[in-house]
Length: 91
Image 1 (tube, rainbow, N blue to C red):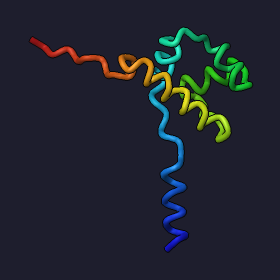
Image 2 (cartoon, rainbow, N blue to C red; image 1 turned 60 degrees about the vertical axis):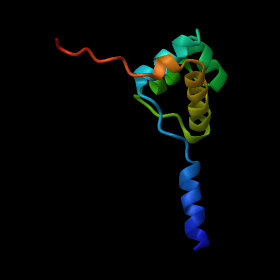
Image 3 (cartoon, one colour; image 1 turned 45 degrees about the horizontal axis):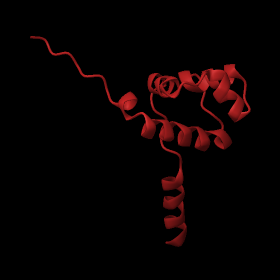
Image 4 (tube, rainbow, N blue to C red; image 1 turned 135 degrees about the vertical axis):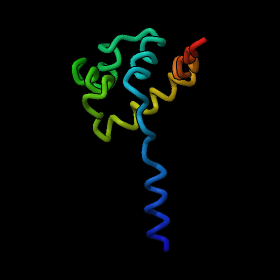
């Protein structure tokens, strides 16, 4: 039973799903940062970061947890960015 619980805990400890590419970009821009600036912090090229942000590629495990943490931090600072746009109802 202990192995099963350990496996469940490992699943729970996995990073959360990344927000949509549109939200990722809006969060970065809301914090006033360029792709180049963020890429430099992660030690990757701007092109590699662009691919993460647009959803073309997923960060490797060593970067994924940090990227999720960064996005979570930005979302906490800029909650209006992650809220869905109000839908327009036909009159």
